[in-house]
Structure formats: C-alpha cells, structure tokens
Image 1: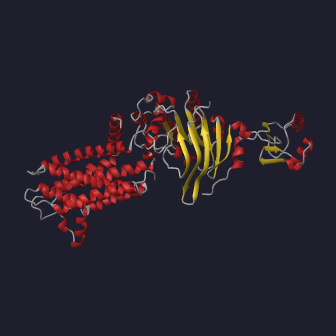
Image 2: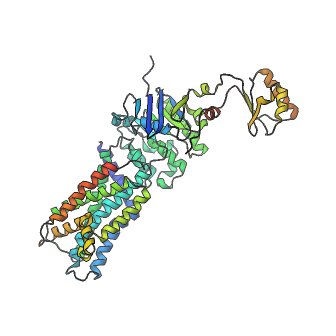
Image 3: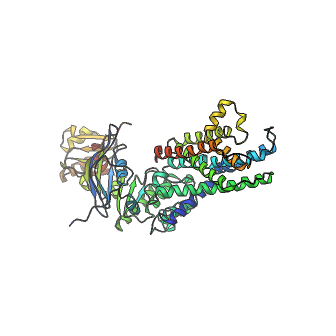
Length: 242
Length: 308
C-alpha cells in the first residue's frame, strides 16, 4: 500500500465527515447536549454526583455515535452510490480503505473525548482513575460498534440503514445506562440492556473510572463478545454493491 | 506475427441461479483497438465487462486481460486499467479536483489532475460538490478519474449516457486521441451512432451470446444487396412508386413515416427511375442508401428487448 494513498484517503474521509453537518450533530451535538442537560437539570434525583455518572456514559455514547452511526451511515451511502465498487477497481486495497476509515473514526473520537472531558471538568468532574484501561475499553467498544454499523451498512439499502442506525442509536441510548442509571429500568428490560454493547461499554468505563469499584468483569466480557461477533458478522455478510 | 491480445475471452459463462447472464462469450481485443460491446439492456454486456475488471469470478471459461488473470493478478491489473462505471461511483460530498487528487494518489505515475479537469471540460466546476454536478458533468468526472492512472486499457460502460451533444462529441474526440496514443478501449453502448463513430470492431450481444461481430462496415454491408432505402416526405403512393421502379408492390415499404425501403439493388437504372419519379411529383429526397443497412437496423434485427 502506498503511503501517499493512505494519507490522501484518510484526509478525504475526514473532509467528507466534517462536511456532513448532520453527522457532527450526532457525534458532538447530542453527546454534549445530554451531558450538559443532565448535569444541570436535576432529572435523576438519587445521584449524589450526576457529573461523575454522566462523563463515562457520554464517552460511551460518543463512541457509539461515531463508530456505529456516523461510520455506518457514511459507508451505507458510499455503497449506495457505487463508491465502494468503484474503489474496487483502483489500486487502493481493502486494507488501505479500512485503515483510512479506522484512522478517521479514531481521530473523530479523540476530538469527542477531549471536548467531553473538558466540558466535564468545567462542570465539576474529577477523577483519579487510570487512563489506560479506559482507552482500551473505548477502543474495544469502537470495534464492537463499528462492526454493528458496517454490518448494517453492508446488508441494508442506504435509506433503511440510515433509519435503523438512528433508531438503534436512540434505543441503545435509552438502554445504555448513559444518561440515567440502568437500575431505573424494569427488571426484564435491565437484563436485556446488560446484554447489549452500549450498557456494557458505559458501565465498564464507569466502574474503571471509579476507584472504589471492582473490575467490571461481566460487562467487559459482554463488550468483548460484541467486539468479536459484530466484525465477524460484518465481514461475513458485507456486500460491496447494493 | 500478431501482437499479444490485450483482452482474450474464451467460452465465458456467468450464471445467476437459473439465468445465464453470459452464455458462452468469446472475443479478443488487440492493442490500440476501440472495441464495442453492443446489446440491449440485460444482454450481458456489463456482466462481461465486470468479469474482465475483476469484479466477478467467471463460472466457466478463460479470461486474460493484459496477459493477467483478473482475479488472481487483480492488484497488478488495477494499476494498469481505467474504469468508468455505468452509475458514477463518486463520493457525493467531494469536489472534482479533490476526487482527482485522491485517485492520483493511488498510482505511481499519475496524470496531472488540473490538466485532466481541462481535458474533460470541468474547469468551471472544479470546486462544485459532486452532488450538485449535472448528469453530463458527473460522467465527465468519471471519465477523468478513469484516466488519472494513465491506463493502457480503458473500460467505458455507457460513457456518454446523459451527456449533451457537445459533451458527447468532446468525449468521442478524447477517446480517439487516446486510441491514437496506443490506449486500448473496451466500451459498452446501446447508442449505435457511438459505435459507428468510435469503434474499430464491435460485437453485438444478445441474451448472453455474441450474435454478430466485425467492423461496423462489415456488419452493415448486406450480403444480398437487394435493398435500397431512402427518406422523403411521409405518405408517398407506394403502388405508384413500385410501378415506376419496375418492382412488385409488395417490395416497397414505409416502415416509419417518411422512410422507405425497396427490395431491389441500387443500380444506376434504379436510381435514375427513382429520381425521375420524385422529379415528376416535385418531391425532395432526404437521404438515399444503397445496399448497406444502418448499424441500428442490424442491431434491431439481431437483438430482443429483454422483458424485465
């Protein structure tokens, strides 16, 4: 793979992402809006410190918005417009394309994380926790959500993919323990939620950031399971042409 | 000694379930040729081309492109071909110059993006997002992207669909220049004018098979020669005309208003009789064609419109 091709491809992926205003709304606007709203408005009364609860959840939400929604919708439309097919007859390899897309996702997530952490700190958040495990968890979450996003992008029509990605984003936000605690959900729903990747990511990041909490083994196992299964399914079922 | 062919297809078959999209196609394309695959929608043109481009694996048959196997040697092949797909394949949110620079980065010795913008006439649309380009501009950008890697073989799938007449003429001129520089071109089209204007040789494909092939000149020359066609104002008296020409009245037809076909050879005596008849009635001749059929007529007589 030629290095200039990788750099150029990554650059174009970034430019295209920035030009999609609706994608920036999902990746930056919504996470920040939820963070500030729930930190300022006392919607969840039994939390001692809402900001300590919110920051980990919003980090998980940010990963989900970029890796699943933004990547998935963009890739679905690229497939719809035949871009993926056209790239298939150029010397750009699949690995090259995937590397560029991955780099793009990671760069956007880095910006999201910086903005969320800065906002959190401004709202009174503090942590003494280890950074590395958090980064590892967010990366594993990225793999899981990218797998789900690409699975939908590679199997559904672009419009159906758009609708489903947005709907799934909402469902996983409600069932993700991101804006309010999972315990608020009825028992059965809570059990379902804990099997889904959103809650697994949010809860494990939250526990790792809490020096008093034990290692969230169950949540991490669920998350790793999704991070293995979703990309495998995407690789198996992805169709380059719509 | 004949040079090694650029494309060699032998007994190609491609099946989709019970449908044989390509059903035993063989042809070769020599260096520097413009070769046209003609056929109605669903005839198997695009499937054939996509096998050559490495998109599809043949079910039966042998395919060599630039001496390479399109699947096994795909990576090497993709460095040396340029592809223009039927439906764009362009990022919607990109500018033409950005797209050209991106594609240029894929190749070791690419053409100059700015130069290609001028060549295809997109200078003014340099910074217009693809989603705002007209259909013809879209096609021209696709063409420029197919050329950016300085390919030695160019695949053009319906290259002028959606272009206005001027853009179409520019594109044809461009293809001729490329051929003069030694680039081999395989194009598919159902515009017969395009085939007559551009192609050194054509193959007519119908229902997955090649039903005729040769130069446009060879295909349009009737073996029997007992055929003359002309155009004039519609509604001429066919029986009277037949009598003047000395042919049976069943040998004169008006298949389309104003277009006449006579089942007789265009001998000097025949042409003189026709001219006299027209003169006596004050009718102006539009076009007179002896022996030859148009490529369109050949095409229509050999192909079927596939029910969708």
